[in-house]
Amino acid sequence: MYSEKVMEHFMNPRNVGEIEDADGVGEVGNAKCGDIMKMYLKIDNGIIQDVKFKTFGCGSAIASSSMATELIKGKTIDEAMNITNKAVAEALDGLPPIKMHCSVLAEQAIKSALLDYSKKYNVHIEGLDDVDFSDDHHDHIEEE
Ligand code: FES
Image 1: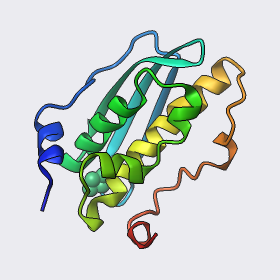
Image 2: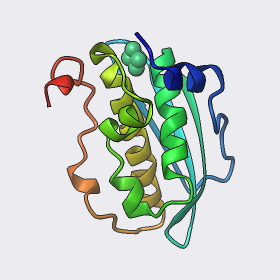
Image 3: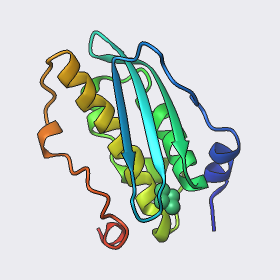
Image 4: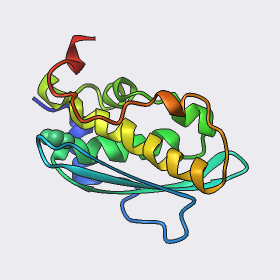
């Protein structure tokens, strides 16, 4: 049911923890499963220098957040904005359809942390205004 990569990131998640002087902190959750994801970003010169996460949730959510941190570390803000839940799931060699919303949480956590950063430092980030932070992704996400 789960790819080796999902299992591996679940067993050995990367970048777990928090950044005390983070430039942006985002927290998202899914009301249906109750899982919560928190993401911390350290940003310098428009580059994500460091990222850490804390996820209280299922194995797929932990694997998704671990993979998401790897995908955005060292990247520009714009590159991080372009990371979709599908990219996270693909990097994990797929997630079962019922678990796709776990990867949505990872995408939203990144964007929520970027939103916090943009408010704190008064920086405009292209596309942030259109982000859907709702947690209603259980039923329709896999149909895309
Ligand atoms: Fe909801 Fe994984 S079951 S985030």
